[in-house]
Length: 51
Image (cartoon, rainbow, N blue to C red):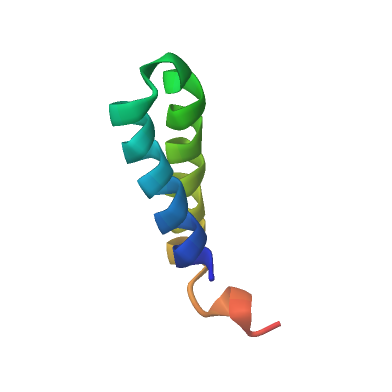
């Protein structure tokens, strides 16, 4: 589920770069959130799912 949300955010970021250059700051914020989510999932690994 985490990867699905990250992929959606990355796709929205890519669409924002092409379609909506005015909202570039918001779209880049979505990219940062997606990258943080992926890093948290990689760092926590399966330990986070054991609870």
